[in-house]
Amino acid sequence: MANAKFVALFYGLTDTGKTYLLGSAQDCPETSPTLFIDIDGGTLTLAGQDIHVVAPKNFAELQEVYDFLREDNDVYKSVCLDSLTAQQRDMSMPTVLGELDEDQALTDLSRSKPPTQRDWLASGHQMRQLLQAFRGLAKSGPARRRIHVFASAGERVDERRDLGVPALPGVLGTEVGGYVDTLARLVSVTPTERNKKEVRYLYTMKHLEDDGFVYLGKNRRRLLPRRVKDPSVSKLIRYWQRESAG
Image 1 (cartoon, rainbow, N blue to C red):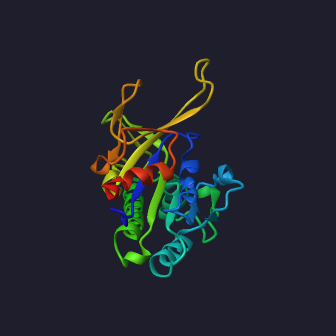
Image 2: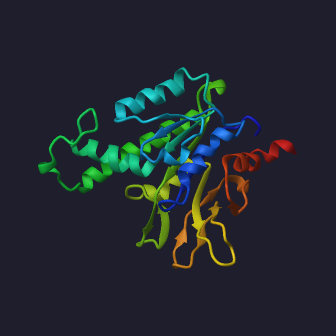
C-alpha cells in the first residue's frame, strides 16, 4: 500500500473548490511535484502557488502531455485534470462535430449544429479512452513511472435514475466510478450566523441530499471516512496509506 498510486475524481457544482483541492497535491510530499492540466481555464485559485500548469488546446497537445508522463517522466509524482466536464464540452464534442481547427478556434460560427445521438456516443467513447489512458499512468507500466492521478468534473442530476452524478456524457456519469479508486462529491457550505466560515465537505460514499436525490460516491476498500471536512490531498493520502502503518 505504501507504494500504491491512486486515481480519484472529485465532482461538484461550480465554485465548490474543486480546482483548489486538486492544486493541494502540490503541498503533499507524496504527490509533489504535480503537473496541472488546465482544460477549464480556472486556475486563478492557484495564483501564487508554485505548480506547473499546462493548457493543451487540442487532443494532439494533450497526447504529447500523456506520452511524456507515460514514457519520459522522472519529475512529477502526480497529475491533475481540471476538468473532465470541460474536456468533453470544449474539446471532445467540438472535435467530434468537426467545429474546431487545430488551434481550438471555431471554424464557422454560422454552421454550428446540435450533436446527434451518434455524436454523443462518439464523444462518450473518446472520454472513456481518456479515462483509461490516465488511469494507466497510476496502475500499469514501470513502477518507477507510476503517478497519482486526480481529476475534477461538474455535477448534474440524472432524473431517470434519481441520481446526482459527475457531469459526463450519457451513462458515463454513472459508470465513471469503475475507472477510479475514489469518486467523491465536494460540497461547499456557505457561512451562517452560527458558522461564520465557509466549510467544504468531501462525501466519499453514496449519500442522500435534502433535494431528494442520491449522489454517487465510491470509497475503495473504505479507506476514507464517509465525509472529510476541508479536504486536501495530504489528508486523503494519509487515509489511503493508513494500511501501510499497520
